[in-house]
Length: 211
Image (tube, rainbow, N blue to C red):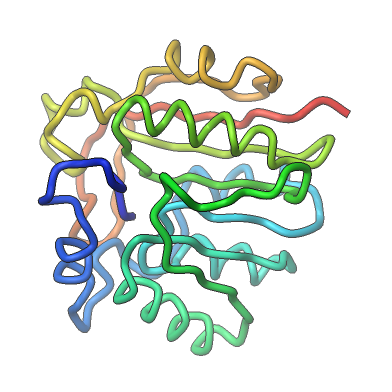
């Protein structure tokens, strides 16, 4: 998935991700993230917003479950592949090439907001998560899986800057108005294309806006 949006190191800008996604192969595969697949039933019916969605594997999966899905990413190349995957799977997907620092999330609009391996500078992450929490409908669910700082010992994917790797404690602080149905840090095997392959240290969150 696309990680830091601006302000961020130039290596993580749109040019970086367009070059990375500008291949015939899907860097992170075409199947959904295992954690998302496992908890997808927790997302109520209705529209879902996928942040830093990259090549679209998770958005297409959720569209296949009947959600109206909007996929947002910094990379036009990634989202072009997302649309191609949607066509191949016979589903409809809305895409938006956008910088997450300025992308508008309408309050109370979404049944689910999903962020899989979205790694942002701390200030931007705090701001975006506040907007995401406000963007949920009552009963709506925020879903996130990300690498933690412990991932640096594995080297099997993700940024090398520990500031971009959130902990569960940080995410609880940054989502104070949501109730955590799932909140855990663990080690697991992440096998997602060539981009994520091997044992990894992750944080997983399912957090619901109160009714």
